[in-house]
Length: 458
Image: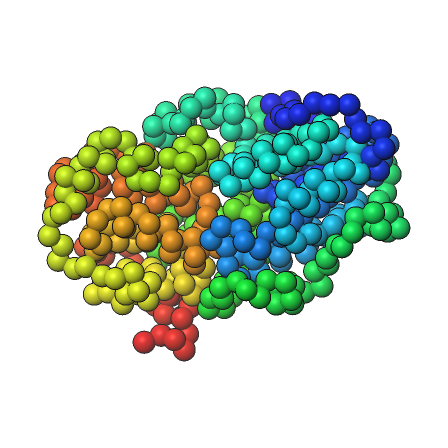
């Protein structure tokens, strides 16, 4: 069994004597491989000599989610369903309000297990379930290598603050899961106890039948959801790009990054799995996977409501300098519609926006440049902050993620230091097209995005 620090006993009570199963509500860790919450649930079910039921709730009004996000997620859940059923574990998909649905299923459970949620929305759901359910509840931190409550005790000012704490504890928590099997299989006849459960014969059809209200975006073929696809993409990265990662990761023309972030966002792969497969010699990649990712989760976890407003989330020096220059003249000012359609004077910015719209992802360097340009071209930093969040959450498969929110805040000075003062940005770091042209193969990047757009390319 893994470290006790991953386990949080949220509510202690007598084990429900009439319970028919152990219930694991899978939400943030949508996988079977290296899922500590699943391992713990199997362990508890075996300890109590009852079957295990895993349930997943599709939340139709999940904040900022659209058809693109749901399709990717459902492709992964379809794989989870197949794997769990083959192991004798019950699996039930519900659609609706997770508080009501989980509490209803939990009334017939010995105990309830969550995987840990880090965002304010996820934590509110869990808190409301605790208010309604009176029996034992465990929460398992499985989507980070170092559990967030043990990584750093407060919001970290920058990477240099959290890095020593994370790296000291890395070996302690870099623990793969045991391949436990349930002692008691969940029998099909038991499903009569569960009420209406849904199946995913086709992710596309499920989306059409149950989530037709969602905003639809241009179809992408760059990403398919699921752990199998995540492992395939990781294998290709290790074979083709890992050796030159530090040299090539910043060049949009080479695109030498792992492109694994959508799978991490939905919990379709564990960072522990990734770390195990890349080994300990990939220092630059480990910095991104471990330190920078855990810094982002630290930010979202401790900032809470403060993350929503620029003045509350930035260090004082950054907010003050931006406000001091908020009324500076701007050579270009664009509307949200012009920015969203990639109709600016800047071909590099337009390509970055189109990469996100037509590919569901944006290269890391271009995401920084893209964010900086929106700051430069909007009437006020507060407007820019809202627009960047809106666009990233709408089009990126890995939008609505701590990494994305930390990256957006970084564009405004979060987790950074003061630079030489200039117009509009004040002392916040600036980026320009000349720097991109000098350092990277931008012609190759432009060509890549044009190919993504296909017939839509102008």
